[in-house]
Length: 200
Image (cartoon, rainbow, N blue to C red):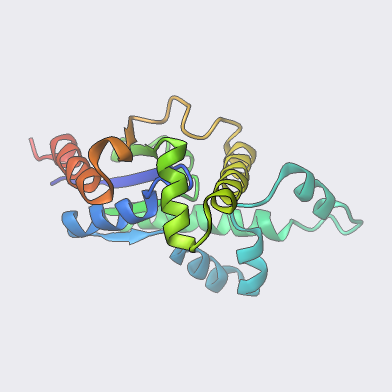
């Protein structure tokens, strides 16, 4: 196949991270998700625990409060964001890969070798996954899902100015529940990627 980068956005609880890993394995390439935090830490020298707390959960209000100060120095979250953007571009230049989250669709939007996929699922399916993955009862799983979904959407909105999962960068929107779960969804996406990037 031609050189390619698959940027996967996902609703919390849809199985997007798992699907990304499965898809990468089927395509014989690496999958990058939270590992980008570690790469960004190495590049910026920030303490990892601080970055993990800020990662994908920064609301506009919190960022505004953190930015108050007389020094005019960049926010930790903004420097992390810039470091991750640089790393994403380097990865895209250097290898075919799958990148989950990190607003990769936005960072790489001007490239023709990128396929943007958004993984969604009905609330009921997502709640069941959260119950299983986090060992929570249904009511707590539902609240946790809504909280994480709001945080993730807020982060995406802050970085891109667009609505997550509902913008022109999405080339393929997939309901993982409709395909019977992560493995079948990954198989379907593999076929789509191979059609898109097959050699002429």
